[in-house]
Image (cartoon, rainbow, N blue to C red; front, side, top):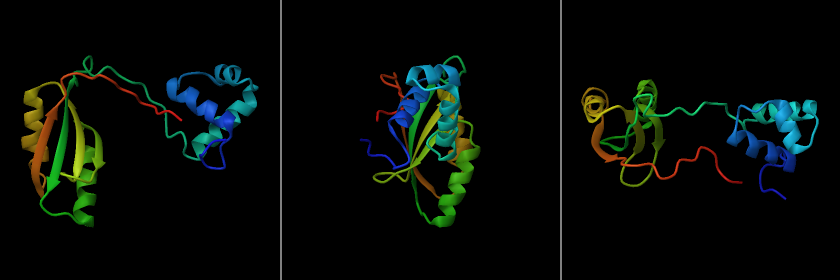
Length: 157
């Protein structure tokens, strides 16, 4: 028995496991893997999308080939934080192409950014012209990625 919402059964969970590994499979291929005909498989897949279990489908690109292989995790501490500052920061970060992920965190900083650029010079430019220019940024701590040991886009369930 699963511990997810009552809306999911074992077949739904099978579908989620399959599409998180390969979102390019056709409905026919998925239906063969779960031993269900194409139409019910299609209907289940659309239901999982409609309910928000599947948020979208993406292609995973090679960061180095896209000239974005210089990766930095950037901890940002604000000197002041309130609803308006947080909303403004969130909207602004959403416009920065260099930031591929942004999390509001607890602990030493307020935000954790994943920044992907092609060089140290581009990262410095990002810090000086964008992040450092944002009002209320008090402290930035950069952690440079030397190698990626594990990169998983899905999660086990």
